[in-house]
Amino acid sequence: MESTKRFDFKDYDVKAELERLRGNVKKPNILIAGATGAGKSSVVNYVFGRDLTKVAAGEPVTRGIHQYTSDDIAVTLFDSEGYEIGSARQQHYEEEVIGFVENAKRQEASKRIHLVWYTINAATKRVTPLDKALIRRLRESTAVAVLFTQIDQVDLDELTALRDELNGILPEDAIFQVSISSEILNNETLRQYVDWERLIVWSVEQLDASLQEGLLMEIHAESETMLKLKRKKANRIISGYVASAGTAAAVPLPFADAVALTPIQVTMSVHLFRYWGVKASDDLLKTLIGSTIIPQIGRTLSKTILLNVMKFFPGANAAAGVINATVASGITWAIGLAINEIAYRNAMDSSKSIEQLLNQEFGSLFERYLKQKPKSDQPS
Picture 1 (cartoon, helix red, strand yellow):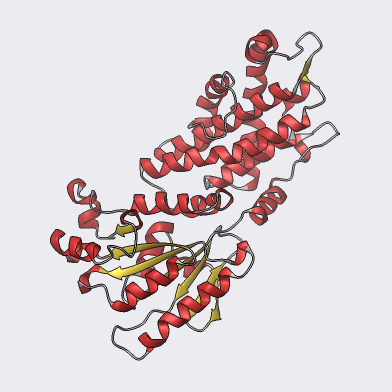
Picture 2 (picture 1 turned 90 degrees about the horizontal axis):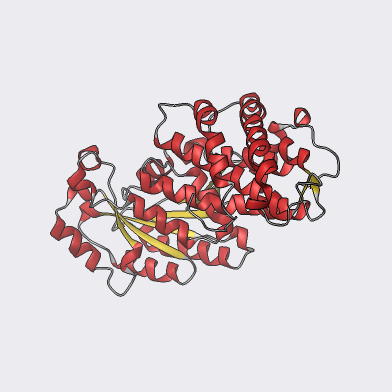
């Protein structure tokens, strides 16, 4: 990302950068398993806001397991075909699923199954011996969550009895109860019994940090809890660019280069827009950065850093007109936090477009964050 030449934003290829970023995302592999009718499709549709099995290319990877993947989707989904309880296929299901996961475990990290979402239809009011055997064996290879689906079909006592069936098999915090019933989701009292948010938080935390971005990019985040999690985890993205900016400025740079933005900071901006799923064409993204973000950064730096540089960044040489690694890191951190906060606010309330928010709020946010020291896990 570094360059020894003076950066000219007019030559920046947003489309090429988006394609490069897409190729660099490390995708978590998620297996969704359970009996026929256990609600696997409903779980996928609700969590991701769309049916990934329809928009991604699917192909069988082994008997009973289909893989769904696409260059435009930041997760890879593995779907087991399921089985009818009591059918002949039930006998083979365990070995198909376990064999697949154990074989994947022997592969390189990118080929392993990183999460299993095991679905059980609460309406059946039972956890079968096969369910228990599968959960036990799957946990030997990877992180497993059990999702009791269709909880609107049972009462609280029945649901508690189902959860108790998993005592000693799975930790309590890995058991979730979910529903897509509008009657429950739109009722504030009943909604507290639904664990969609807790499922996502748990799933993200089970993943290696390098895989969390992919899952967070794809989840259909609407609640404040989910959006705050997404905002917090974006700090890992920002921190990577902060480190690069510090390295690039190991040899002091002219202040003019900071005002004009470097490729590192532009690429970070594009990365964050993609991470948040900002719906904008390549041309609009370039306009947002070139006509909205860059001018505001220039104005803020002119009145803040050039006049008060020693206060914020000890060691910067204002008289000589240069910045050091500390200043470059601070500028990059402030840009990243400001864009992250704007995207978060846009996701929380879409009544204002991303363009309006950038025009109205980016400058003040950038100036505010400019006074902070970069941290690796600071909530913005």
